[in-house]
Image (tube, rainbow, N blue to C red; front, top):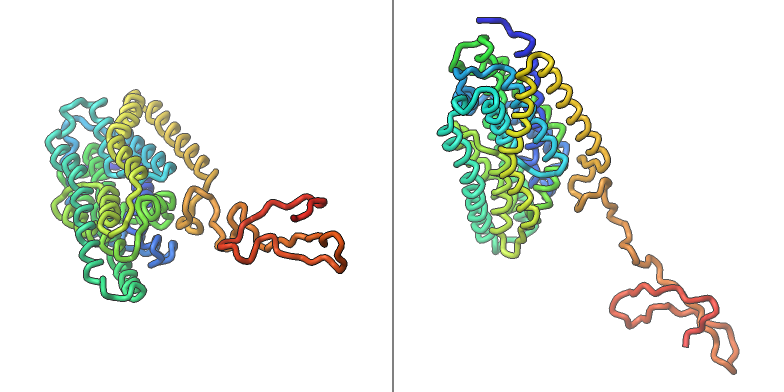
Length: 428
């Protein structure tokens, strides 16, 4: 076996950067509903999710095998430059959708990047079309529907079972259940998404002759991928957490518990079968299903439509970026260096744009796009905090001091803000 070259080292570092962006991009999958219902404080939630993502990374390697030898034909002349270009495409799309607050699929960004770069550099023979259809496209369509129907049924059952109980009493129990189900989602996310980076690094090692074909990921690959996704998770993708926790539907504790439990079961089953599905789509579908399952619940279909559009665009968009990167990377060392510089420049520009309206743990549960938390004591525009007094002149022919009376009659059903009168005007 050969030693790790500089290029393979660059690919490994880039894969870990993608894993890091995957972590903060997908934190919302496990913790958005838990944070929005107040079951856990934001920082506590992301810390717990980070630890469990790390643990989950060590539980299975089935999805990693799908990535390293299932979708891309490792014997078709795939070179490290191709994998590098694919990773750059996935990272750029992840950052763009994070800036927009859209919970798109990091998994599909990775698949699209690898497929686009492979098609440009090797051709159609480098991609296993049947594996793409069976293990990527079909799960992409089916998973959010299945998870949404399961969450809708679970939500209806939950409300039916608790219909004669006190709402405040059951809310406490469901919040505790949310913590447990969120932990399960985080564990499941580690078993699925962390493995995708393991698979990419293993593929790079195979193409570079460092490990034998069809090898399992080495232990150091598993550990590094788990640590990278855990660090990204701890930073928290607050923009996407706001969208999933507030933008899709108004989530109550029973809905959050049902949505997370359904999502966790779906993700764990897919990890066992080796399906590299999108945990983002599963969790988003579960949240929408929970909104439909509650009587009187409202799903914000405009937000859902934006999310669906991002899902459809993810594979081709990441593939196009990766294809352009592959064209440059195929030119040699200067091409690889150019792709790296352009990737860093785009990432820096996106980060700078995000600082204009920052979202973090202090304002993640605030409505709208405000960059600062909304004060609970703030007065709405046009309201009057103190009832103004208007001086009423004495009628002609009477004596005595003038009296002060409120501008708003005491019989008015609601306080009305009146425009100030001119100083010389008299009230009839």
